[in-house]
Amino acid sequence: MIQIIQRAGQPGGGTTSAGWSSVDPSAQNLDIGALTTTAEFAKENGADSLLIIRNGRIAFEQYWNGKTAADLQQTYSGTKSLFALLVGRAIVRGYLTGIDQAVREIVPEMPAHQAQLTFRNVLAMQSGMEYSPQIDALAQTGLTQLEIALQRAVNAPPFTRYHYNNAAYRLLFTALERAAGMDLEALTEREIFQPLSFGNACWVRLYAKAQERERFTGYQSVRMAPRDFAKTAQIIIDDGLWLGERFVPADFVGALIKAPSPSVNPSFGLFHHLNSGAFYRDINAPEPSIDGSLVPGAPSDLFFMYGAGGQITAGIPSLKLVAVRTGQDRGASIYKPGNHFAQLLGMIAACVAN
Image (cartoon, rainbow, N blue to C red):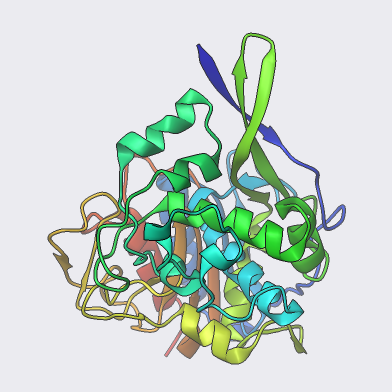
């Protein structure tokens, strides 16, 4: 029997998160009573942390269940927001020619039928690569993430079908490693953890163990402190700047929060959910679409990334507001109408006083 083991990789960045200052919420035009109600709602629904940042300063921060600002949270698919910035940094460094570069140029063992995959259509979850839980389950057999991706069929032209596809995402791990000439952990340390002053963040490594032998098979996600999780959204809010310095191009971050094919899914950009669509698609059941926006009543420019258990980093450019929620999901799903994650994001937006 093969056992899949998760193990923290090399911690990076530094001993503590840096880069934020705090301010009284009233100085940021946030309603104290609404904040108190919002925090109580978050606590009642399994949150371990809630951060609200306005105009680049922490205006509210609270932790529950024994957690502190120093505790790391495995962010699961929330890591995709960080990974999207890593792609941008790879372009800045010249490792990639741009987000329309074909992945097969870097990973030539990809079969010919996967030649249509580009960084852009993979980030959009519209690469045309099949969604297959059966192939995903091959991870339990000890295959690497690359080996699993190479087995995938392609069953649609690019930008004609939305499927939330982790196999295509993880294929980009190999592509970035080869383009940069270093492993994913070293690349993330150099391009994300160090320049953004992350505190002890790390990738979680995956190993397949059979008897006494182990095989490294890939990466799960990044463990990071909530304050660092917030930085991904803040950079998007600030058009690619971090603390006034250019981190990634403005047009790149603009693409992250714009649906590349609105008729297919207006509620997903490049590794970010969007609140601007008239419908959205579930992770496991993309057909049919679900009418309405993901966060009813919240501003249409709200964007966020969502990881298992409710690990959320979100931004609202029109309000200059960033929010992070980590914790447990209590059985909820961001795709279910009326879910408490959507309610929480709506409540956070409503904390901004008129």
